[in-house]
Length: 129
Image (cartoon, rainbow, N blue to C red):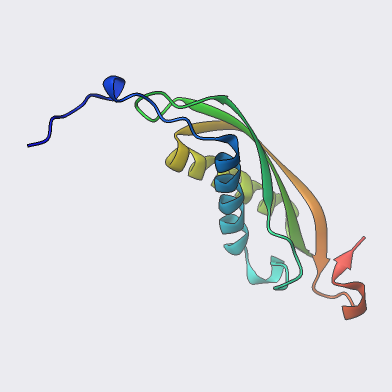
């Protein structure tokens, strides 16, 4: 029979900022994949979302109580509901970092780096503006 070790006695887990950034970028990809087909970027045209993270407080021994500030850069299809897609990214990042890293994320900034038009000529590379 294994002895049960209480959380304060186990110590804590410190998650590196780059790991939190990878989790946030993956969550952004999940949110964008769930967007309506008409608003998605054609395959092979966009870079994956990337994130920068500042961990303000690491989770405690019980795996909760951490806090991070996140900035996500994305490329989106156009025309689309840009606000709704950014909101979906914010929600998904907040949810997944809470689940996977035990962190509250009160601030998720989403930067739209590029819009890809489904109606643009092929020689423009699908970019708008």
